[in-house]
Image (cartoon, rainbow, N blue to C red; front, side, top):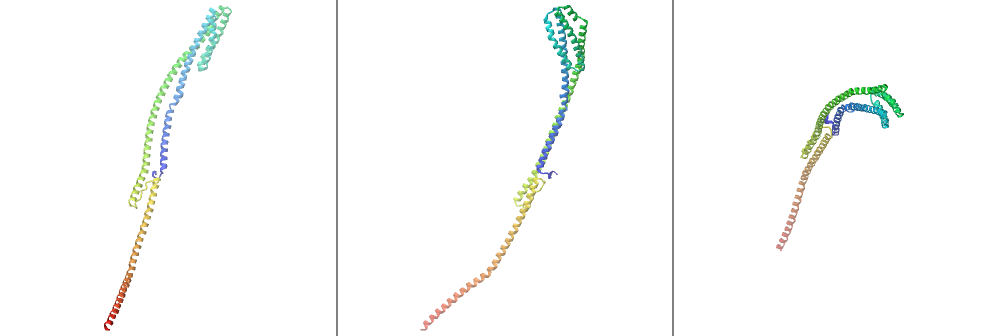
Length: 340
């Protein structure tokens, strides 16, 4: 099956396999890492927010207690000394205390709202009585002013005021311990979970890296072997044909581009051998024809030689006849001279 796949698709398939492995590795690693995302982004921040709110409400409670003592002391000092600096100090502290109580009510939970609402109600009642005491002091009625600040109604409101703060402090102390314990436990669990996740992710990355390397090595080996084996076979066959072994053919190992090249080379070598064979046959036929012509020429040349020899002999005979005739004439002429 692998031998029938083209080199192009072998390379593409290798890259796709590596890309898929990389994506799978990344996805698993992402899932492992996001497993600790919820505690890190939700639970722990929520615990920190709870601690922050608890500390913020504790600060509000401390400030409320401070301003309550400041207002009480300023109201009493003004009533006893009639020094206006205590009145100014009181008037400057009232809006700050009101703002802090409102902030505590707004930021607290339902139970906190109940505590701080009771404090707010008591504060309003106390402020009302303290303002009346200041009015009496302004008119010189210091006895009435002190009487208001020493009245049972005033100290009942102070008791309500203090009880609200105490109830809040007691509840918050228990809740704070619970919050700190819960946050500590959550941090420990998150740290442990994060450590396990990091260890698993690191191991997974090592395994996936080894797998990717192994697959890349195997795929590269198969691809290079598929290409080099065919190229070596083709090179060996070309050298054999170059040395005169025209019957040699390359072995086709695959049906990819290299295999197609080897098949095309075999086809070319086959046609080349057929062409060479045809040329040899034609050459042999021409040689035979040449031999036949040479024989024929020899045969034709034999009668001609005889005729030439005969003609030469005739010429020589004619020359001999002429010489003899001349000799006869000469002899005849000599004989006549003797007779006279």
